[in-house]
Structures are given as structure tokens and as C-alpha cells.
Length: 464
Image (cartoon, rainbow, N blue to C red):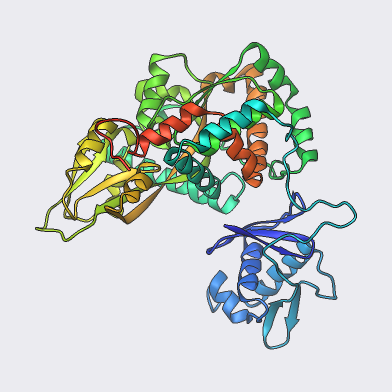
């Protein structure tokens, strides 16, 4: 994912879509279809794109051609493109062309105007500097943690309504698949809450919007001083870890964050054996499917970001037709196995109960055998140059909250937390150096990355 700068605006794009358009720090209100038109015009710039091609890409060739003119007009209004057609030019019988110069870097600021997003809290912090230095010396664990942090933000659906819709649909379809296969009742066993869609004023990273966000959540900040929020975050959700640390440092939100859960199943176990967390970031299956170990006390709030379950194949010439497939039970792989997503018919799944046993058995795999791995384990195994990617399966990490936060005064505080979290997520996403510094403040989480990569100091683990 990268940025393209044109005129007063910039767009965040990747190979497949435009994720958003911004004017300075402020997101531009632009619905999905005009945003797709902009993406196609940017791809072909400065060559024109004929209306027929736009119809084929956005609808179908026989669709009404007036739809194109309507969407281009909406895009022009959003960009303030008047009759001079500074951004999009209409070329008779040739279609539309994007004519404003486009650059990969922001223009130099003039008259004191700042184009780059810089965090407001950049005072020298000795503790942060020491932790960052220690993290950088951690080698492979720190490298994988930073890689996962950036991937989490790239897979964010909090500020991409199209991706958010995809996430909700995929989660619902997989829940339906699992409930049918295992003959259990899913979410219907607990009351449903409407999913949270961050408002557009939470999509900005400007200092002004963050100051405004702080003023709106003053009750939550005061509440946390007497009753710190208990947040259960999986050790491998690097972006969520960084955002929670940023909330503590920039807003003074008092939290007690638990990173000890190394997998979705271990996270849910901790809810049963210890004090119930107020908020939870975890894979959607354990909570929404069967309510393992009291997890039905939690309500899904919104998907936050995607991650991949990666199917790795041992390199080398395979012998025979059957293939071993190692699967770590703690990672909740049921949906991928039932869907047989990216899994060959010749694969025979072998469920492994612990990470240590999985890493020991990985060493004994023959060429052609496979293992389902998540990040950072997939990167750790690939770094040994003995595995190649055979396929990926997209999964989602949603945010949940305990049912007590849906009643009385806590309900108002819950809404404040959601607003603040969404706002801070945007801030950290645009200020990745700040997010990396915040991640370095959590040494226990970094230790988990090293351990989970299979490159940690344990007799059963792989060594670099």
C-alpha cells in the first residue's frame, strides 16, 4: 500500500483498490463507486479511459452509460473540480483522463503548511528510547514484530467501508459453516449488538481531531484512573498492542493489558481462569461459535484487521501421493479445514496440541508435507528456506466487549472507548514510526513473537 499525491489531495492505494482519499489530514467523503472510478483513472493516467471500459470494470458492458457520467460528477464534486477540469478532463469520444500531476511524495510545505503527519507527543522519553534500543537488538523477533505491525495496519477494515463489509460477510459465512458442521448454535444464543462503524471524524490523524477526541472521552479517562480497563490482546496482534500503548502515552488512559494468550484458544482460556477482561481482541471463531469457557459473555463490536493462516509446503521432490498436514489446534483452524481452503485432497491433517510439539514435528516433515502456520511462524519457517507458500487463508481479528458494558453508565463509556480506539488506530496507522516505538514498549509481546516464530531459545525450536 502506498500514497499518491495530486493537487490538494492524496489517496491511499494498493494494486487492487483505492482505500481512501484525503485532503491534508481530513478524509474526503467519497462513496465506493466514485472511489473506484478515481482508482481506474489513476491507474491509466494520463491516458483516457473510455466509458465502455469503465462500465465493464464497475458494472457490465450493457449497463446504462449515464451511470458513468453520474459517478464522475460525484467524484468531481468531492475534489472541487470545477469547469476548468483541473483533475478530470472529459475528452469527446475518448472518455475521461486524470490530468493533474501525480507524485509518490508530498509536495514541499509552503507558508508554514505541514503536509506530513507527525505525532504530537514526540518529547524525548528515556524509557521509550531504552526499550526501542533493546527491541532493535532483539534481532529476528523485533523484525517479525515490525513486519506484523505494518501488515495489521494494511489489513485494517476500521477505515475502509468496503473491506469492513467484506470482513462482516466472511465472518458470517464461516460462522454458518461451522455451526452447521458441528451442529451447535452460534451467535443466536446471545443478544446481538449493532456492529460499530467508525464515524468519519475518527478517520483523521490531525492533532486537532485528536485533541477533540480527548475532550469527548474525558469521562472514560477519569473512570480508568480508579478502575483501569482490562484489555486481553493476543500476543500476535501487533497493531492492537501498539495502539493500546499509544492510548496510555498520549491520553493517559489507564489499562491493564494481557499479552500472555499466544493463540485464540489460550486467550479464551484466560477469560475462564482469570478476571474477565473488559475488552478483547481475538479471532472471531472461539467467541462467536460455541462460547468456549464463558466466552458467550462477550459481544462482537467490529472487525479490526485481517491476518493470514498460511499453508506452507516442505521444499523438495515429494514421494508418494499422501501428504502430512500439521495443524496447531490452538490456532482455531476448524474453518479452514472444513472449507478445505488451499488444502489439497491428498493432505491428511494431524492435530497438534501445543506449539512446542508442532515445532518439533515440523523438523521431521518430508518434502511435500505441509503445515498450517500463522504469522510470525510462517515467516520463521520461510527464513530457513525449507518451506514455500502453497496458499493463504484470510481471517479476521474483531474487537469484543463484556456484556456488562452494554448496560447503564458503562454503555456510554463503551461508546467513548470505541471512538477513542478508532481515532487512535488512524493516528498510529499514519504515524508508523510512532506505532513502532509504542510496540517496542511491550517487551513481553516481543518475546512472544520470537517464541512464536520458531526461532526462539528452546530445544525443540528451530534455530537460525
